[in-house]
Length: 173
Image (cartoon, rainbow, N blue to C red; front, top):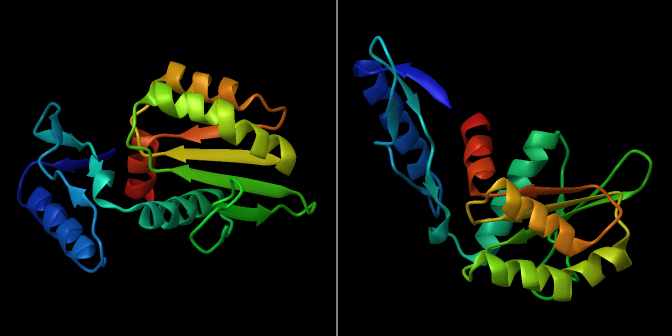
């Protein structure tokens, strides 16, 4: 969340964001009107980027860049195609892999959970990463994240990022 005054400053911030996004080849569409009123003329900006305008490759690039920035590390990316469950990889100081998997999923969440259970869980088990990071373009509830972690059925730490998490990271980075 960004806090700002609802006056000329808010217009300047909106123009700044629009100008910054205009320089991106495939900009995320921003709903600049998403302001939650507060008291004393102050509002809280709620970022709500439309991730559906990105294709799968652009979404993977966005995810590796944002999670890398948040973690202070660089994730390797690989060419498009069958990736064995790896969209990004980072080696920790002890030489173990952190795996990032981005799912720009258009189907329902129950179908995504079923896919994770039937397809991705075996890949994670074979990779044996030190850490597994799953990023999806859907909005997620706490129970959605828990279901995804349970579907992967792995002993390594799993982090799940949804649309709201990505919006927060976009606001920060």
